[in-house]
Amino acid sequence: MYINLLNPALTDKKTTKMSDEDIIVLFLETQKGQYFDMLYNRYSGKVYGKCISLLKNEEKAADAMQDIFVKILLNLSKFSGKSRFSTWIYSITYNYCIDTIRKKKKDPLVTVDDLTNQYDKEAEIDDSFILETNVKRLKIILDEIPLKDKTILLMKYQDEMSIKEIGQLLDKSESAIKMKIKRAKQKFKKTYYEIYKES
Image (tube, rainbow, N blue to C red; front, side, top):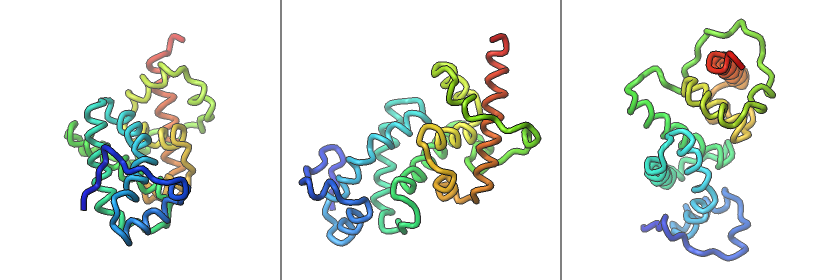
């Protein structure tokens, strides 16, 4: 079977309105590339954007996106429908990018599931502190904080994923996700004041 990821097949108006789940069923039943191309068209831009935000390199992001869609293609029959298809794709994307970064740094401590207890006793940080941060400063701080903290903040504030969706993606309870977000926000604020203490 040949899937043309670079020149997706054109589809009619009826098929473009189909749900992801319906398209997956049709693809698995028929193995026609046009159905997988529809999924590619819907999500390639978002996957590429996520790869860029994590890998910080256009060429690596493009390569990663292609590898991720190969993984999606090979594992599509394993999609259970327990979460949204977009959440399942983001899970594959985040895990791929984090594995890539970890291999590059050769740092076994850089993992999404790693939780630290360093800031447990600090007060809850208001979302507005992050949302109102200057865009230039925001990028600088996100590049300074640990990858696990950056990832969880991007999920919540950039991808606007719910606590439940993040929990499904990371296979953690909602309370664990809330704690991860709290710690990431505390790390963000601490780093902000370390860099911009004079202002």
